Image (cartoon, rainbow, N blue to C red; front, side, top):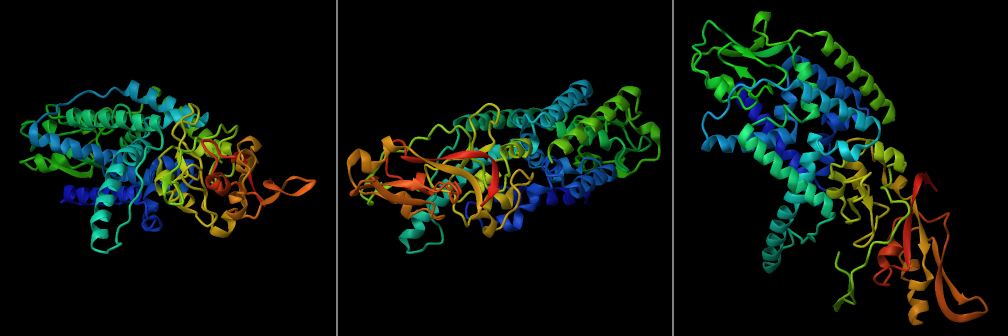
Length: 491
């Protein structure tokens, strides 16, 4: 019964968070965005202390339930481990945990977060790793199926589906997602939860807490006949059936062992007999580790405080991304510094963006963290999708009224690219489509009122939405582009 409850809850969380990532309509974001916010690392970075404390208390009560139910990467590993189990029976055996490696990885991970080097830390963060895979590998497949359905629906005069452009937003991020996918699938196929109990920093942290959990999986030595079924089916490789012991720091409370025991020797209850606990004494090295971790965690909390065509007749040359001195960050991120410290590169805002202006960064320092670019669309003043789904507080939630008055960048005009000057024809696309009314067209020759008109930008009114850059017909570089600003402000 316990296993069925665990599997049911895990399926719900896993399917729901995948729908949150894959949905490009925006319909599900308001209903499911809380799933991202209850992930441990996002909760810590967003300083959602109620969620963090709740997860810690639940871990101290029931062990690493988070890893088996809430964490999407954990459930993803369980899926492939389960499939592997249909082919390779009784494939696990007890292995002593490599605690030194686990704790070193955890300490380095926390140091990277404290130092603001999130782009490196998120390479092994479980939530970021999974959402990176889902956004870059699963989303194109999902969108492809949607486009096929849209094609056939249109033949029956139905518009229940609409087509969505499929494109790779960042080659480096896509490559990292593919490599991560291969590693996770391979490890889970052969070693079950080996990734969780060797590399994953969240798993190590929760494993340390689960040593002291009130309810544990227990082996009754009087009933056990040492058949080894529990050990051979333990995907965490934490059960030593010969000695009737369990390494609780690696047990993910999956309940698989309970279902495999034919003698009823395994149960999930409060353990009173301390002799059955494997290596749960807190020696001086562990005390030192816990103290170090507490200091680093405190430091972390403080630190975190469409295709373009010409008249619908011919496809125009693709635009190229301008060289921006300052990258553009979404409204609600407050500043580049705040964004870099809190963002874990989970790609949720990238998936949620209906305007295709967010894409993962290719810069080493901010690798995989989203930045804005306006080749395929612009940031509509009424859209707040990214702020609604961000789980870490890297983009705080804002309303539509606030969004339209937040300055995230400033428009810059490049005269040598401007169509009126290069081709001698009237244009004015930038001025006509500016939602802030920050651009006016004036004669290029002040002494000749009939001369072709060029844009003049009112920097105090410009919010950096990118409508001008997107609408500009100049190719390959727009005659007007947006330069990001370090500190956002309200105008």
